[in-house]
Length: 331
Image (cartoon, rainbow, N blue to C red):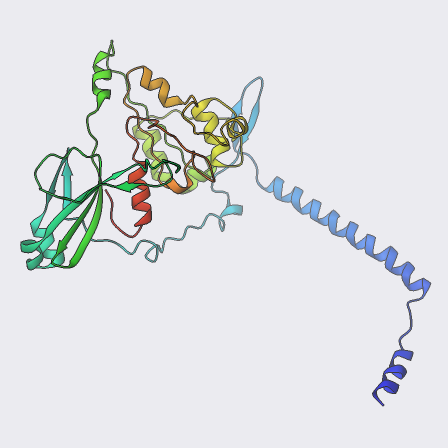
């Protein structure tokens, strides 16, 4: 019965005639053309709506228009989520502080945060955080810990990076990380440098931030740079790559990112000439630091990093340790 009904129903469905196909062929392209026409007009109207307010760069060889950073058309995209409580729930103040190469403990804060018994019975130890020098591993790919030592507050320390643990009985109160700059041979090198004391040079890279977005989202930083430090802004420059490596390598080495990647794909970067090595030869003390070592410029995604320390101060091992214990405090 069902099969008979199905056959009868299908008999009422007719195939489209040739006239119907002609209408479809004519109407569809027409709709597409009309849609594209109005889309182009809308884009042109939008572009005319955002008028430049001047010229960012006006030279004989190059002219760039200046557009407003806070135009009403990007108002919604410019909204900032100010409710950061779920991201930064707050932390207790540390009870250990550093002066030079000496660590001290604030017993009043210790008693306030952990109780009077903690202030009386607390025992603190530390372990040095070092580069992983094991054979066959990337030296910049992690860290290693030295032997456990008792921490004597008020006594100068010779280690550079420390993981400090404080306990009361079997209970661990906290683990804090400290970076303690130590005087090295660089001080002798600096003393041999002739002439007046040179100015300090700080190169700070902020990824994924255009000039306009810097104006929008880092207003106080821009104000500090321009009004208090009298910074000079280089205009007309643009990115040269699509990633951190492609943009920062040319800045730090003067070489194209693709060339460096091709040459050092399976090698360490010890032979790569870089900016701070030039300053080092001129007597400067040098430091290289990245806030996310697992995504570091010379290790991500699978680069080999450095075999030897590339700078006088290189806190990458400590940053790795902090990253592993990301919920803990570090200073």
